[in-house]
Length: 277
Image (tube, rainbow, N blue to C red; front, top):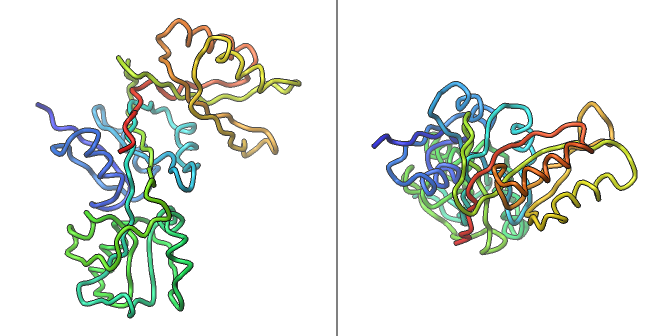
């Protein structure tokens, strides 16, 4: 059996790695890279490699930079996985919570723990490139007055101590991750498709775009707009719907959408993760 290999942003112990192992199984092999664009570039360079990207969080919303990468590069979404994200305050084994003067973590993790952070006094908050990477940095530099916000797994990997568990704002803090590949797949069940498009400028254009799905009883699970950088106040629309590009209903809907759009890109059809536990 071939071991699945996937690229993820950050260091070992990152939530992206955890999500990848949940999707592929514990025998899969995660390879850390510096940033999200490196994940995509690595996937494009290798024939059978996969990448994993966080795309939205139930607390803070979409990770817009990763939507932009799907538009920029020719990769396909081939799967998704929902991961309950539990954030912990982690420090060296010599540290005490009363002695912490600085907390470091990825911006998304800091956003997910705002209620906890707001209660702190005389503690500096600093942005880092990764949750697990923050734990690794504290370990390597022997910092006893600094804590990281990260996963329980990262505390174990780097031999650190959890000062306070579950500091996220809500216990239903779920991040949706997408699996990407340089080849598309044909899902067999619980099918879901992601697309991005732009519309011609005429009254009721967005209503017309949505109606191509409504008239065919196709369930939309998400729609959101992103600015087009070189066209002020014009937008890309990212849309997810239940169904596959191989279904006749979906084919007809997309053909209809093309009649009123100026650009349409299919990001992928894949199996929806219906598990939120």
